[in-house]
Image (tube, rainbow, N blue to C red):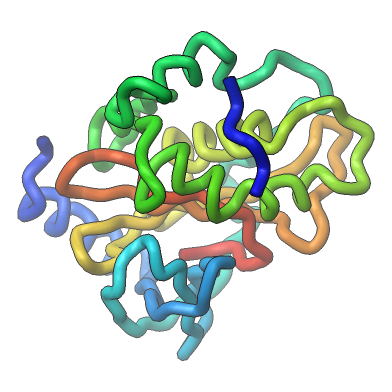
Length: 215
C-alpha cells in the first residue's frame, strides 16, 4: 500500500439526474466487480467497487468518449504537487477536512474530503492509488498519482461528457471524462476517469481510471 502523503435534497437531484438520463439517452449499469470499479454504459455491462456501495441497476447506452462538446482532462507532465502537503497535513486530524471543492452544474459545490476507507481521498489512496500510478506508467513525468487523479476529477465534475452525470443508484451519481497528457498521448489502457459522488452529501466517494468512456 502506498504511504499516505504528508443540500441539495436527494429528491431534487434524482429528478434532475433522471431528466439527464432521458434527454441524453444514457442509463447506468452499476453492479459490482471488485477493486477496479468500471462503470460502463454498454448493454448488460456490470461493474463495481464494493466500498462504494451495493446498489445495482441495468441500462443501455452508447459510448460517447470524445463527443464534440465534452472536455478532456489534460494531465500536465510537470507541475505543482497536488493537493499539497499543507492540505494533506489536515487529514491526520480531521477526516472531514476538504482536499478540494468543485462547482458542478447538477449538484452545486461538491467536496472531496480527506475521508475514510469508504469515501474521499483516503478511499482513493487505499483502493485506487495503484490504478492511478498505472496511468502515469510509461510517460515521462514527475507527477504523483494524486496529481493525475485530482486533475482528472476536476474536469470530470466541472465539465463532464455529454449526457452526464447519470444516476448510479443508492443516492449516487456518476461522472466521466477522457484523460490525456499534455503531449496528446493517452494512458494505456485506461483512457478515462469515472467519479462517483454522493447526491445526499455532495461528497466525492471514489475516482478511478477505466478503459470505458461512459458511466
